[in-house]
Image 1 (cartoon, rainbow, N blue to C red):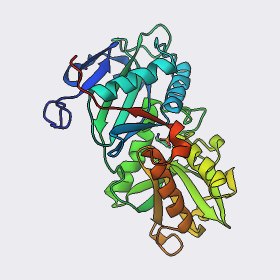
Image 2: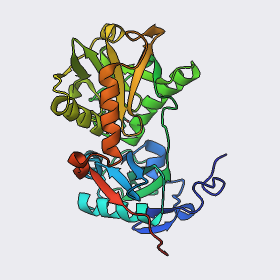
Image 3: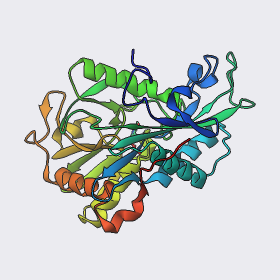
Image 4: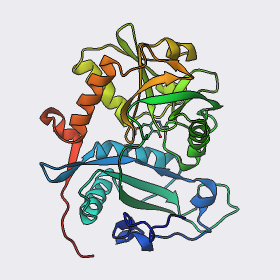
Length: 320
Ligand code: PMP
């Protein structure tokens, strides 16, 4: 079993827990914790990208991630005593204290911390916020993806809103990703309840057709991805492409000129095969390749025009 103590990558790390920075090994919750039983939390996945020349970690679109987390807190009645500005500050502080000099993943979690089960409601239950940062590499394990259409369907807004990163909802993504990876694929493409294209287990989906970029509209139960929004802006302003947000049929995927997935963890990764059918010629397409390169330069802080999307954290020696 992997534990914080047994994994050398985690051994010297700190976490933000119950209002202070503590060694990661001491950031523990009780088995009675509400969120552990019912998934009553919201989280974020944020990347910090190590820039060797600058000697800093560039945290990508930090503020936007916390705006989304706080929207989730409103929905789940998670009353945490921090503003988005406070959360950004806590994050930079923790990243610096952890003295990472490599790419990292930043995981904030707001959750129902009440140690009380058999209590199926949100009100009158204590909430808390915790934060960890860990080294992180290539998430999908491959530069180009072979995907399958999942037999699982995406949760629908009247069931649990997919537009927020609610902990419990991720069982839906995990069922799909488990099915796909056990069958030898890299990722699952999940359809809506009504059979339209939704997204990957942890990524938004784009397709190129007729020289335009198409992506599922937010009303189709996709997460409003921060990478999705970034790529839409870049495609329009840097490549002059039309971007259409609309309902997409499954069959359109097989006929697309290009498909790619976007996400904080996944960056922008081309899909070259779906359900054993190659997408176009089965190679990364030109628009995916251009956007991928542009996105990557921006997230590591190599494009001054978009530097405002990066928050720099400098590793330093701090004793706690
Ligand atoms: N969809 C789902 C279900 C996700 O979990 C993620 C990852 N947060 C995304 C899309 C991509 O969102 P973002 O670009 O904000 O990471």
